Each structure stands twice: as structure tokens, then as C-alpha cells.
Length: 416
Picture 1 (tube, rainbow, N blue to C red):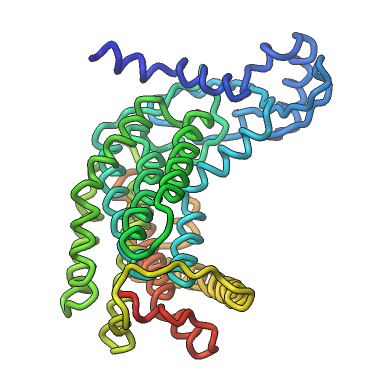
Picture 2: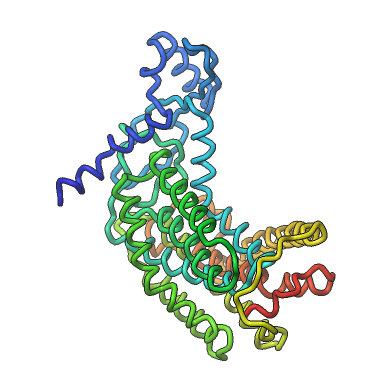
């Protein structure tokens, strides 16, 4: 058993995956003279990327350097290592794939789904995603296994370098979001399930392999993430399906959602060094709270009603008019979401600093000194407020605006 664990943790196994998809050390693809020239240019110019058209076979490649990033992983090596990307297709595919598990994707996918597809499925998917992410993020700071050592692994991205690696929460998201969408939609709509299954598998595969390609996880991190998410979904998916109506209709829902989320954040596992996982968990929790309180508000105001026909429903392919209205909702909605984020972030940060008698300018420039630092406390609070407001506006305020403008989706308030 330990032999296999050590094998799957081996950073050289990640390096083999990178080489398979066209990421090589410079010395493997260029002669010594060219490598020295390029190395000097990279150091002198402090650039992340340079184009090179002097490969012996005449093909184009891109040179990258890790020495611009100051972030280091817990217990990982920081030696500068240069690499060359010889296949742009895989590079852009896996960069896109890893973004499917990042904040930008969540901020785009969740509103789009509520405004244009199905709110009942959206609420359930958000709850499944939140539960699995919180468990995965907490385990990271309990296990405290570092990301693969670099070198030998090439770090094509440094964004998540300060987090621990076990398990891969990107892999967990790659399972939880597409497959929960599949499981909940197959109960409500008549469509070829095999097509949805293929899309979910491809989605999950691209995200999982991207973490190896970018050098951010070991093979063991990804496998454990996939297995853990799969096992967690067995009880979570049906449980969330049964709890959704209670959360939507109970008068105690806001109190329960706020209390549970705050307790989870307050008693989040603390590691020996500061990592951003607690803040990411706060973001996920607050989005879930905002979305469900927004849906609860719709129901309590009496603007939601039971659908005239029970599921399953036939899939209606959009007409040009429907597509136009969808684009209008997206353009207006995303503009308001961005405005909500900017206003709430600035206002909540300034207010918290005032209440705690802290200098906001000095606080922004300071570094994290630990889980209980003033900077960490302020950031946790403003993230909770900001992202909860974004979730609330996504489900309550903006659909109301769409209704006033006559561009709403007719079935939105019947999705219970």
C-alpha cells in the first residue's frame, strides 16, 4: 500500500505527465548556447513569457520562467527552473480547464444558470458544491501535505501555491458540479442522459489533468480528490434534494444558514502556517448562504408558486428572441454583480477597519502573521459580506429587476 502511495506522490510522475503534453526543460529542446541566451534575456527583462522561433525543426514554442513569483508552497522547493511549452493546444486547454474550478468560473456559471436555465437545480448544485468544497478545503489544512516539489516539477501557475495539496479540490469540483447537474437535471428534463454523462466526464477529465499539467498537484492528490468527492456525493446529493424545500420554505432558514456557516468559518481547521484555504472556504460558504436566502426571500414574499405541471419537462431549444433576452440578462446582470462586488468590498473593508480601529491602508500592505491576525479577520468578514451580497442579488434582486424590465425568464418563479 505505502509503495503505491509513495509512487503516486512522486513529483517525477507529474513531470512525466507534463512532458507527455509538451512541457520540457529548456536543455531538453535547445542547445546550450541558445539556452544561455534565453536564460539571460528572461532574467534581465523579468518577463514571464517569450516567443522563440529558433527551434531546430522550425516550430514555435514559448519559454516560461518561475522566478517572477514570490509565492512558495509550504515545504516546497523554490529553485528557479525554466521550461518550454511546445504544444499550445494543450496549454490553453488545461489553463481553461483549471479556471473551471476558480472564482471567475463560479461568478459566471452560477448567475448564468439561475437567470437562463433552472433555479431549482441551481440551488441544489450550489449546496452540493459548497458542502464538498468545505470538506475538501478543511482536509487540506488538517493533512498539510505540500504540493509537488519544484523542481523537478514545473510550476506553470503560482496562484494556488500557498495552499496545501491533499486532496485536490479542483478534482472534487470537477466531480461535484457536472455530475450533480447531471443527476438533478435527469430528474426534471427529458434529454439524452448519455450526452450529459459524456460532457460531465470530459469536464472532470480536463480539470483533473490540468492540475497535473500545471504542476499544482501530485497524481495521488487528484485521485484522492476524485474518490472522496464521489463517495461524498452518494449521501449528499439525495440529502440536499430533500432539504431544498425545507430551506426554501422554513421561517428559520436564514438563522440556520447564517449560524452554521459562521460556525464552520470560526472553527475552521488551523494549520501551522497561513494558507488562503480558509478565505476560499468563506467565499464558497457565503455564496451559498446568499443564494439560498435570496431564494427564501422570493418564496416568503409570495412571488414564487408551484409549477402548473410536474416534471419531467421537455427541453425547449431557445429561439432568437430567447437568446437575445438571455444575452441582455447576462450583460445587465454581470454588470450589477461586478458593481456589487466592488461596492461591498470597499464599503465592508472600510467599515470593519473603522470598527476595529485599524488603518486600512497599512492593513492592506501588511502580511499575514497567522490565522488570528487582524488582517485575516478583516478579510474573512469582508469576503463573507461581499459574496453573500452577490449571491443574494443573483437570486432575488436582479431577477426582480429583470421582471420590471420585461426581460425575465417566465419559469423562474415556479422552480420549487
